[in-house]
Image 1 (cartoon, rainbow, N blue to C red):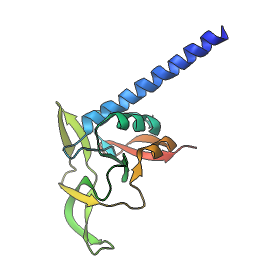
Image 2 (cartoon, rainbow, N blue to C red; image 1 turned 180 degrees about the horizontal axis):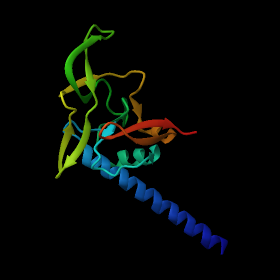
Image 3 (cartoon, rainbow, N blue to C red; image 1 turned 30 degrees about the vertical axis):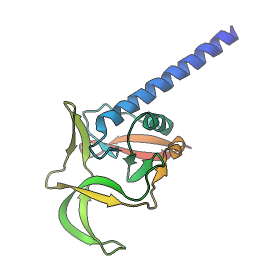
Image 4 (cartoon, helix red, strand yellow; image 1 turned 90 degrees about the vertical axis):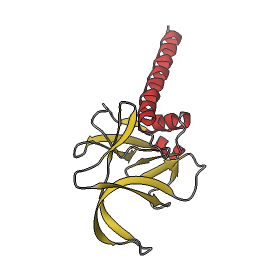
Length: 170
């Protein structure tokens, strides 16, 4: 009897794991942009997205053909790509200063990503326009997929979209 209960418990855990990986993989498949990366920092309210474990994101990414994912300004990639990574946000062209490389820095806001009728779209805040920027490795990555096993992905409402962020396991 104990053996049967253990087998059922292991089977149930495997079904839950598969279900969670598939749920996360659906987000990735829907939200991969034309540059072949996924920005999960802000996701449209159209998705009924809930918190999930980083290990499920890692497994979903390993099954997907995306170059990298961005969550909360952190880049997580498969270890193959090095150098610069592209991200998309929005700006209103208000100069707020210069970075360490003497490059201009403009006021920006994160855009929310969505998939409407099978077409990937950005939801841009009013008064802003899209910009694509190249970023290099910094204090927040890039990290390899394996680091996700140590994190939980939190989902909260964030000014008209869901904001996703990483938090360490306790």
